[in-house]
Amino acid sequence: MRVIGIDPGTAIVGYGIIDYDKNKYSVVDYGVILTSKDFNTEERLEVIYNNMDKILKKI
Image (cartoon, rainbow, N blue to C red; front, side, top):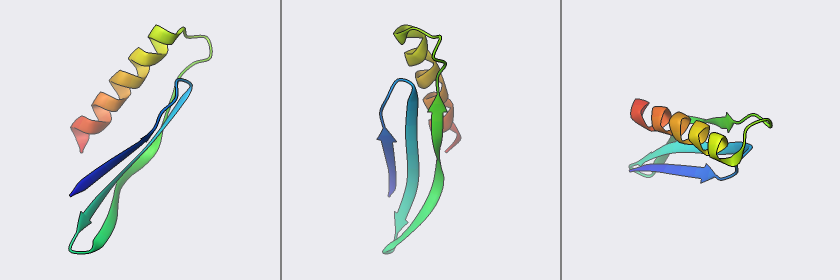
């Protein structure tokens, strides 16, 4: 089973992805998505969406 955790925000979004198999956990990926303080809300959401889409497609 793959588990994805997301710490929501608009300036910084944290994420972690782990696998669970046969009573054992293993780290798949983790990190943060940063957005510029100069971006408005719509631009920040676009950056978050695009980055999360890339992350989810690569796993």
